[in-house]
Length: 630
Image (cartoon, rainbow, N blue to C red):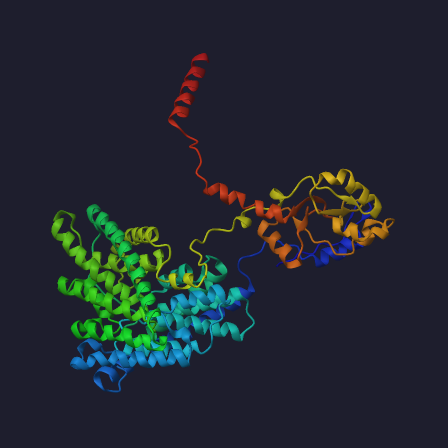
């Protein structure tokens, strides 16, 4: 907390008391603070380092997935990116995901259970419950386990694991250095955003994703480092990845939608919101089924992998990450029927597998499912409403983003992500409308999202709104009790006690400021202090008020005053002016601080209209009558 020193002064020849001089030096009075300082510059430097490091981690992770894929499906040792969909294993393909799931189960049981799941909920839980401290072993166990799961055919995306890995890296660096819990949270978010940016070449969406799902705040102290880390990772991607400067999901250019088409895209978003709520419930219903199995949880991924193998045998494109499936859907170069079958098979494979507790991501599967269903619905609407000029490619794009927006409740991140990965500016308006509709419908149908349901079941309360703090918007000068009741420093203890029994009984205050003849603050004394000094009735109040007085200025915010109370374990603070010497003008208590929330409550209450037709007509008539009189 920032402090402000006030030099000794005098008023009308009356010096400020020595006790006040000492108090001013030690009180550490809250003052207006700059949202950015040298500490933020240091965190920004770390963010740049984490961004660069995470980009290398992303490259290594993707190479590891490629290595496992080549070994598992083609029997070769190679780092070349290949798709498992082109394998010639026949029925043996049923066994590959099961073997991978067995390895993941072993790693989870004997390494760390934290590698289970899709990454983001686990990172959110560490932020909310463990001061952003992620165990160091997660930094390497998570990417290895995810690479094994994906490389052996798991229908997951690489983004969830790299978000968890980047977040673990940022948290680890924060634990090695002297940082606060807030700074560690920022560094964790930096790593997560950098991982997303490095994989998808989407720096802005990565920042928004970190804000909406990890930071739970919108402050310059955290936003600036996360943005710099995301920029660093994206810049490194252009160097480390072949074609890293191009969009991840290239698609033919689209034109501006017609009004009818725009209405359809918003309606499509609403449908995706229903689907997202259904998928959320489906995944956790499957998870509940696995919880009831009479076997150890280590074996659950193997059971889920059976579904992966079966779906992979009949629809090979469901195996692995499948980013090319998304490109096919949004480019509308595949047969609509096959795209729909792929989306349905991906949903079955992914939901059972992720519900079994294996290691993998959710973003790419949701994109694939949403793009596939969007393509199918868009094609049907284009035939039914030819005059609307509905572009099937935009429908697939909206379906892709809206599905993730409804499932994750990351509205802005979803819309911007779809734009950054395709570079289609005319898709922004349909994306925003579709994602907003999906968010609305999904939130109405399901209280928790796919990302928060798991930790909500564990009793973790996840913030869903990032409103400004009402205590930051009001000063203590507006809520303090005025005029303040003060006691003179020269009064004796006995006089003060007698006053309390008579006039003082009318006041509910527990503490009273002590001032000298100049009106300057000397200290503060409570009813309890007076009761303890029964035997010191002849002593002056300034003699027993030995504790240095804590105070706040009229311009201090209620939030700063509350922090001041907590820091010094006190329940009341005199409010003084900035004059020399400071004069007591009020006193603020914990009750006053709590009453400051009344403003927020009033804003949320429905109010009667202040403008009505009757009032308008009456004012018009009054004005005309006045003009006639004149």
